Amino acid sequence: MSEDKLITTHQALIPTLPSPDADPAVLQVWGGSSLQGHVKISGAKNSALVLITAALLCSEDCRLRNVPSLVDVTRIGQILVSLGVKLKQQDDILNINASTISKSKAPYELVSQLRASFFAIGPLLARLGSACVPLPGGCTIGARPVALHVRGLQLMGADVQIEHGMVNAHVRGNRGRLQGAKIYLDYPSVGATETLMMAATLAQGETIIENAAQEPEVVDLANFCNSMGAKIRGAGTNTIVISGVSRLHSTDYSIIPDRVEAATFLVAGAITYSEISMSPVVPEHLTAAIAKLQDIGVQVVTEGSDCLRVIPSHNLVATDIETLPYPGFPTDMQAQFMALLALSEGNSLVSETVFENRLRHVPELNRMGADIRVKNNHAIIRGVPLLTGAPVVATDLRASAALVLAGLAAQGKTTIQGLHHLDRGYENLEAKFLGLGAKLERVPQSVAIANDAFSPINSDALISS
Ligand code: EPZ
Image (cartoon, rainbow, N blue to C red):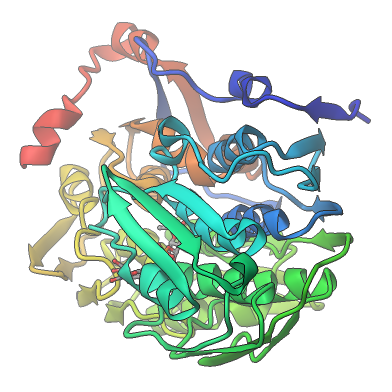
C-alpha cells in the first residue's frame, strides 16, 4: 500500500506529467494476434475531471475513489492546488480539501492545457462570488465555444466579461450569491449542463436546466453533489431541477467506470475476432454501442451486473452510425467503430454531428489500407478484407485509440506517433492489451527509427493534408 502523498503545490504534481520530449515515445503494434482473457475497466475520465472540480463547492473533506491515473486528471489536480486546495493521493483514491480556496483565478498555463478546467468557473463563482478563468481555445476536434456556460451564469445573476482571453465573472449584489434561474440550453451540452448544475448547487432558490445533457457523467456529478448534501433532481433526463443550499458537507464517493474505455475494448474483441470480457461496467451506459456491434454481427453478453463479454464473428457487416448526444451513439466512440467498419463487408456511412472536425483519423486509417472518403461531416466507408501496418499519427484522444485497434487487426507492424493524446484518456492501455495477449511496445522514436527505417511523419504536414 503506497504512502499518502500530500500535494500542497502544483509543482508536486508535475513529475507525473510528460514534458515535451525531443525523443517522443511511439507505440509499435504487431497485428494479427487474437486476444483472450479479462480486462479491468478504470474509472471514467470525463467523470473524474468534473467531480474533482465539483469538490471546489465543498469546504470539508471529500474522498473520491476509482480515480483513473491520467494526464488530464493530474492537470485538473494541478489547477486545484494552484487555487489553494489540498490534495492527498493514495493509489486510485484522491482526498480533496477545498476549505481554503485562496484564489479565484486559474492560471492560464495550466487551463490552456485542459479545456475541461473551464468548468471550474461554476463552483468558483458559486463558492466565492467571483471567478477568473482563461477562455478555453478550440482543439483539434472543434471550436468548442462556451457561450452556453456563460449565458446560463448570466441568467443566474453573474456579470461576465471576456477580456484578454480571460472570462471574468462576478456576482452583482445579493452578497455575492448566485440566484436560481430557468435556463434553456440551445444544445444539450455536457459541459454547460455540468458547469450550471455545479453553480446552481449553492445558489439562492431553484434553478431549472431544460434541454440538459443526459450523459452518465452528468448523473455521476449530480450523485456526487447530492452525496455532499446538494438537492439535485432529474439528472439523466432533459430537465434538471436544483434547489440551492447554503453549504455542502464531506463525502466518500466512487466514480463510475469509463464507458468509452469499455467500448474501446469491446471493439478490440470484435476487430481481432477475439472473445474477451471486461468489468466493472454499467451495461446500460453502453446500450448504443452494443446495439451497433450487434448490427455489425458481434454479440455482446452481460454476465452478472457489471461484466460484458464479446462473442466475436468472422462476418463483420457494414452499418451506418450517426453520433448524437446521449442516449444516442457517443461521438467519443466514433473513431474506434470506424476502424471496425473499415474491415466490415459492404458500405457504411458515419456521420459526426457533435463535433465539426472529428474525422481526422480517416487519412491515417487510409494509410493502413482502409477505403474511406470524407464529405463534410460524413465518412463513406467501403469495407476492405484487411489492413496493413504503417507509420501513422494520432491527431486526438479517440483517434489514437482507433489507430491502436486498427494496428491490432492489421497485418504487420503499425507505428503510432502522438501518444500524448492517448495518455490523456486511457489508463495503462498498453499493459491492459499486453494482459490480453496483444503484441505492442512503447519505444522512444529514435529506437523505432533505428530498428526499422521508420521515418517519423511530420504531424504539422498532416494538418495541411
Ligand atoms: C464533453 O465535452 C466530453 N469532455 C467530451 O469528451 C465529449 O466528446 C463531449 O462532452 C460530448 O459527449 C469532458 O467531459 C471533459 P459539449 P464538452 O459541451 O462538455 C457545442 C473525450 O474524448 N457547444 O457537450 O466540451 C460544442 O462546440 C472528450 O473524452 C456550443 O456550441 O462537450 C460541441 O460541438 C472529447 N456551445 C457540442 O456543443 C457551448 O457553450 C458538444 O459539446 C458548449 C458546447
